[in-house]
Length: 376
Ligand code: GDD
Ligand code: MN
Image (cartoon, rainbow, N blue to C red; front, side, top):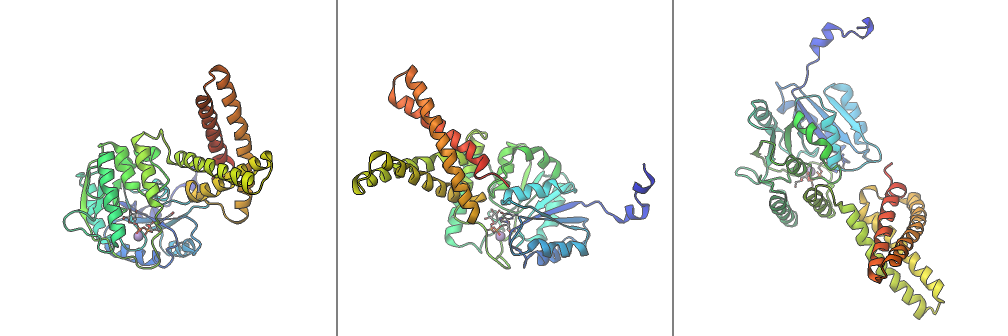
């Protein structure tokens, strides 16, 4: 080995390989991250640990706070992701960047009980489990800080997941768990980076090959700031269930895109009728008006729903709209072309129409995810 690269033996002994990596996804948590670090330092005394915060470029400056913290303690790291959003993706990257044999995932806002971590670690280290879940729904656990609506949704989602995905633990929606890193690495390529149900995804993807243990904890109240999970999490959840049930053959994004497309068809006809009847425009003008209206509403709906994790704003919105018009115009040619050639072979109007429409939607979906809502 090159002399200059040889590690200093003193430095080598001083550097302890961690037993436990704690992964903390953060978005706008600048008031909470230091408090969590202090709590971890106390709870994990006597354990060699590291903490990896994964921040999605929070506008509140969370990553700056973390960089300062990391400068004072080498056990602290911050991964700052730019142009990406998502709780699951952040957890996956954090675990893959960790170096300990065991990795825990927890919220930054002190809702998860860090004093349970040593017990969870002991269960992994003594080999009695591959995955330990902090559970709200077993004897001794609770989620008192939930409002009624949230509690109801959580219960419903839990029972749907248990039935459809054959996940048989009490709290597959928990955001607090610890897993052996080698097990996780094997599953990682199949996990969904969208959404926030990483634990459910891990268990469903493992198909019963993980030994899972639950330990109770009390889901506390948030220290500062507010929850990032809005009503759209229901969609994320459905998407995950669908993807897992069909082994990733059906993506929720495509279904949403097609659904928005069918709404667009209605918008088109309404626009056409208004232009013809109320405005008394000639047919070609009216048809163009309907199409423009439909493309615009499709674009806005997709931006709001289908691609809400990559939502375009300001100038990007305008640019996206123009590119979307272009994509859809080419899509229309593809649509009509395919419909014609099918009709040529088999003059059944609905078959030809459906084939054309399918071609159009597949084209629009594929190309707009490349050029309109492309990942930056
Ligand atoms: N990097 C990153 N990117 N972090 C995020 C994102 C994101 O897009 N969205 C949320 N987070 C971080 C938050 O900053 C927080 O540290 C943690 O992920 C959980 O988000 P919260 O906003 O606090 O979620 P919650 O408390 O409403 O929901 C928690 O409990 C649920 C159980 O009901 C989470 O742990 C969920 O995963 C869990 O299912
Ligand atoms: Mn939280």
